[in-house]
Amino acid sequence: MIRRMLVLLLACLPAIATAGSKIIATGGVTTIEGNAGGGIVPWAVINGYASSDEWALTTFASRVGVNDFSLQSGGVALSLDNKWELSYARQRFALESIGGSLSQDIFSVKYHLAGELLYTSIPQVSVGVQHKRNLDFDLPGAVGAASDNGTDVYLAASKVLFHQIAGRNLLLNGTLRASKANQTGLLGFGSAENNSYQLLFEGSAAVLLNYNLALGVEFKQKPDNLAFAAEQHWRDVFVAWFINKNVSLTGAYVDLGNIAGQGSQTGYYLALEATW
Amino acid sequence: MVKHSGLIIACLLMLLGCSSATQPALYQRLGAEQGIEAIVDGLLYEIEHDERIVHHFADSDIGRFRAMLAEQLCDLSGGPCQYSGSTMQESHTGFNITLADYDALVEGLIKVMQRQQISIADQNALLALLAPMYKDISYR
Image 1 (cartoon, rainbow over the protein chains, first blue to last red):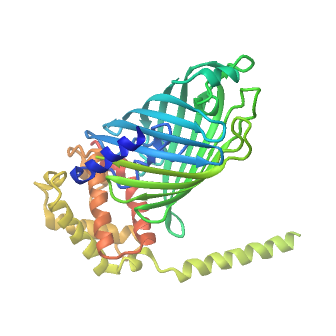
Image 2: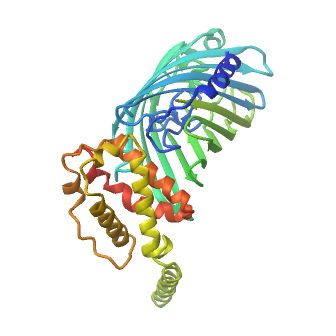
Image 3: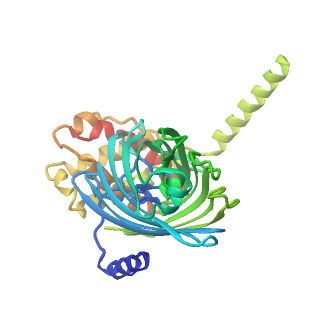
């Protein structure tokens, strides 16, 4: 599916001409869950470059490769008025050394509540909802997950501070998420012992080296609901290259900790995004 | 201990004094009077060729706009000028400048600064002074 999407995306590239009025890079990139943000943390920014009274369409494909697993994600988002972001993403998590795979669908809505990333003294603040549905529940059920679907709610605040580090602009983002998801939902939601929402912190910081290049770090706190294996927090270091307002390319080194009893999972993340 | 911290503070103050003394004012870094005039003229060119926002300037006295903007940029960036025009709120009331309009103008300014090969750090220093005007300019 991801390959088909990439082909479609590349086929569309020559036809892409228009983009919205927002300043380049201010739409962020797209997370593995399909929301505008970094690679793993949803930000308060709205995907693409649609400013007031404009709309934008964004599509992305990404791949994470760590020691024993890989995660392919792809999706689309519609942004309206720099206020609303509606998105769909499909994830396929391959258990390379154990065998098999787990997939899920993610339907999200984000609403920009207040502030403007570049222009106001308060940060841009958005609220988001992600509804996730497992397509394979045999394994998550067998390891103790309580449900094959779940809904996360998050509040994100993002701010660009001008002229901060060697005269470069700095983007700071903090996100609070209420979630029951085990390994972001790939291993289902909750467990018999632990089936209530937990409040989790996620953060990103990035230096904008110039208008097209951002260098940053991310952290994502995770719950630990399943007794069969410990779940750990995620972190990454990324470089995002905003080639123009239509295409961006992101690369990262990721540390996902232990996953499903398999030790220290580190590796790469690559993402391609197109928007018009 | 008290004596020592006094000494440390004195040293820090000296360092701070040095660092600000070695860096000329943004006004100088932008090329003083000539540099700022070039930014203003470049921005006027961008506005004239931007169909998203050019209509807002249909009834403007461009000569006065040019002079006032140059004076304001000179004043803001630490140059030897005193901005004598009306407040941003006064001069934009009735125009209903939207977020998209503001984005378009900032994008135009960035294009001009890039073309004039102003360093990223100095571009960001100027943007830091102008971006917060959004609240006084937009939706009035």
